[in-house]
Length: 184
Image (tube, rainbow, N blue to C red; front, side, top):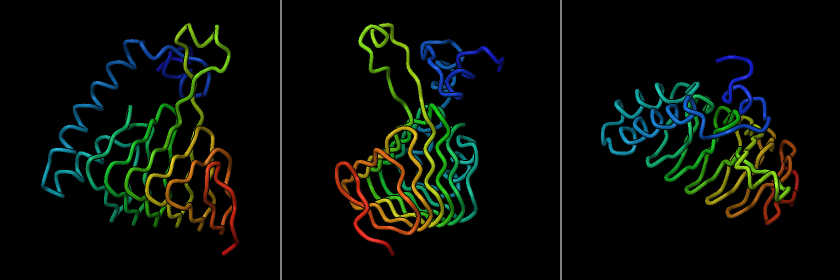
């Protein structure tokens, strides 16, 4: 990957062209691996595919299929983490899920974003911002985490919440937009 490649621009959070051949091929690879992962009934095979797909996967981590992502090489999942059915991780920027996390069904981690300016958006340019879910976080079912968000250690995010800003450690937060309800 060269410094001026579309992949490098994407990972740095700069505007990039998703139709770039290198990125297109990387998404094809990811879809092939996801088909193997999502279609397998064998836990050992799924674990091996997950480790081939992702940047890193900790020990005793379990991801319930189906799971969907763009690239895989931008997704890290810590040890002793459980991911329930139907996680979507738009990993066009790094997405990190810490150790001992619980990820409910239908959670969406959306690092991808588009320009707000109409003229720039018409060009098809995209950008991204990393997402960090720190250790021992519980994301309830159908939580949506937006680009650039960090969720602090030991936090609990209520089901159906839309997390648009950072959440501090050790709190319960919920709603749309997600707000701190109380400290733990």
